[in-house]
Image (cartoon, rainbow, N blue to C red):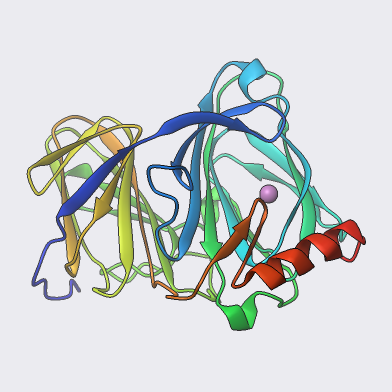
Length: 281
Ligand code: CO
């Protein structure tokens, strides 16, 4: 049952994506983690990848380390093979998600398992609280079929990656260290989507097809709408659209960030580099 709604969240700011490249020449659009929005506690980074030009993705993300946070890959199209220093390996297929808790450290690679065709998906980084930054690494991986799909009024479809919707669907990613709601919402032209979100969570919308209207504000595909205070969100789709709705409970802790390491202090950051250089990951 829907929870009672008091206030719909307004759009505070629309952040245009910034085209850049990472890994070995993978073209992507950075929505969180760039100059426009360095972070949105607890989120440290959001990259959108979408290309049918092999040159823009074939280099993939060769081996690189992480410490102190979680990386979430949600794939819309294509196949990505991942492999890590602890011997963990697999293939993420379209519609699937890999939620990796890097904790004290992994060295992993993410490489396209295709030489042509569309590769599309998102990489989200979720910060860990100080007490969990050095926990052992952990993976949660789920194929498309494991994600519940809610069919709502007007033909709206809600795929639940993580969290629990107001109608009770629960995403397959559980044991979340930082509470996160991660929804993939498909909206036919003229439809409306409403969803309750905890008032204390930071939240954003990222339309990747079509165009949305949120509290009278237009949000184009490829940009990110930062949502303000409230306990629900209402979205209108003037044309057929698809979006991510992501919300998370902020940590409110200091952040010391250096490339692939995100800790609380500069000393911990130096230790992360030293441990990595010494092969202690
Ligand atoms: Co990585």
